[in-house]
Length: 275
Image (cartoon, rainbow, N blue to C red):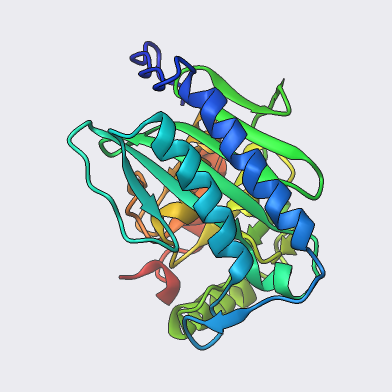
């Protein structure tokens, strides 16, 4: 839920707000991504199915160049770069291209994440879809918006009536358990969506496009903006055991509190919920 009285964020070196700088950074990355969409890419594998392209690297370079120029004292946690520690208490968390497999295959469903953490708490988050030019934005205590219009999670109360979104990721054993869990729920759910971008999936839950998003093995940059988006949109984000999720929680379940509670009850005892 929105914080009541968040502390004001520091201004940048040029006197700009962190939000303005983050918006520009996401836009820079989005332009690079769209300029190269459906062109020849330099692709290498980070794992069996996990890939990175030269576009990921170029977009991240542009983002970090701007963020570090405006906030040189802040730390950085980015998918394709070594982490940068800081004594400021603030850390930029960046995913230059979430949904790289979709991107490389010409599927127009991917995004950029630019978020800011203060300690373990997210204070600013942007998930930007450059295909649709949709910017999901949240600031602590100020609510969540889509292109400036307030958004909220749905009020769906039961799993049997829910549209549930999830992704499988790259941990094969856990992905198999997720499929087993879904099979145990089917057909007693309204619909299922598996779309290939965890950051967009969480943003869609915040915006009420789906009722719930869950995943079992995410990195901080996958969920950084989504944690704040969902909470500022009236929802909660918990781990598989029902504990409040944070930036370093691999597993997440994101929805309104009543639906999360019903999901936890419905899936009690299933292997996916363990560990």
